[in-house]
Length: 335
Image (cartoon, rainbow, N blue to C red):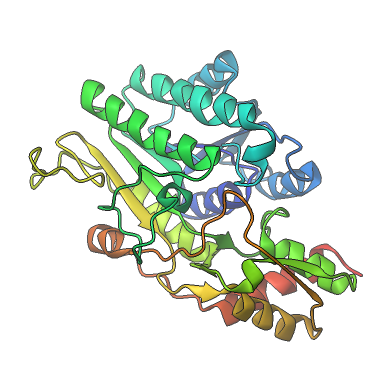
């Protein structure tokens, strides 16, 4: 089928595009290649996609409505995966307007473009950050997510609400995926695995927040992509079990779903660093620091709903995933 992937030069978008192309789909990529992190990494990902005969690309931002509309018109997609966004919890404290522009205004433009073209299915990136101040573990899609601790998290919760409105008013099938700490080859330089690897190899100390005692549901990129593809292929309809007298955030009487997509195996950060040290063959000098504003102590994905509906089953342990990341890093950034 024809799929428009926004954020196609990003970490998840690149891997998803490769997977869709490998199974014979036509992929139209859309990305602004901004400088939130080194654009050369985004360009290198894109350079691996562009030779494929079924891949086309347009450069632009979600908040640039004419550019986005032109991409929709050029690609005539049947389905859309919206992964473009301004990411990052900590950066949202420094530059909040970037999150409103991309994640709110930009997402509205995506919804409008899908609505006016009777799109078969819109899959979009939400985030585990929406659980915010929740302390009940594991996080389940049925839980309340009304206490975000960063504007980034608030923007992702807003995306879910906006998507539901369009599903309800216009019958647009939408599925939101709450991603949990994705890592792997071609990963983002602003995330811990990348930052730690770079500094350990350079002999520099690493900043370990919350003294390394928080846990994260680290999820390998291949498992994430498998879940996204399975979700894309399953167009939601109204939930026949939805009860408006006892509503759940996970589904609706509209063609709307929200799922967690994670590993369901949280790992303490200190343990993750140990595995990274083993793969690198070097010990890290740790600078133990308190929790940063906007961060949450723990994440743990309850993925039962996604497994039930799509057969999703993450299978990559961190020992294997981290090794693959380190092998890629050493090849891409030779000493």
